Length: 314
Image (cartoon, rainbow, N blue to C red; front, side, top):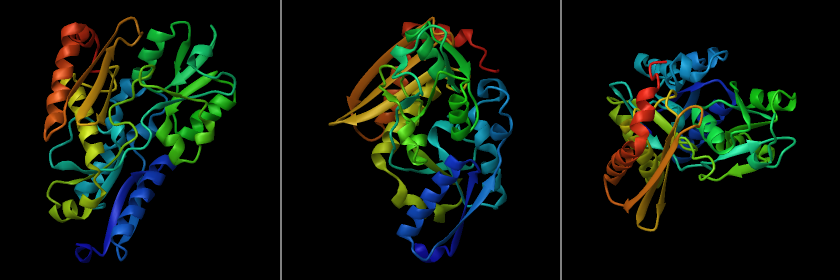
């Protein structure tokens, strides 16, 4: 298959983390196909430009992928690399996630220069986070902590912490690890304290549906276990109408012969938080089944009331 392609172009955002991810995929491709020439097409997305507003208010994380998909549609790039937590639950027609790479650490990281963990924060502390998912869980479990929005790339968020704008911040551990900033992690939050975002820690490679030759090229990069877990999480989110305006989380694990999926839905202020989990025997196509069944359980316990009260068009 390596003879089919002489070169390939990867569309990527231009943040340090996105470039690391694209270069990592480039290295994997060249490991499998040593003669393949790989180049990067760096793009600035709408989500990168509009850092003065919350993602929920400007259209959600899909703003990080639209320009990359346009480059695929135009033929300027062959593939695009995304953090799976940034990929909308419904892809536009004509596109597919062809490979999901083996997952990095999926948990959230508590980062602070003063405090050891969330429980040690005192009244008056300001905690920064970019996501409604984290905000709702923190407010539910630590109501005395003041949560304020924090946008920008990883380095910008760390700088704001170091300059004293925040007492602590929460970031995805995977991003810190990939940028060799794991020494900044003060404490890893267990899923019981902060359930990860759907797809967190996993990288996905997107291409056009009609690029059949790319499907075969990318096949060796797909990790079956990670794909199963991420697809279960995305099934849950789709069933609940998940977006940046919906505070929810989903995290799946393969344990023995079982797939275990945990999920929650909360109000943004944390006043209501509904959690559920479900385990089923692992088999082909179980990821869609378990996602839908867990969504139904959450809905029956009141998640539907929370979701209907949210302005999901914001």
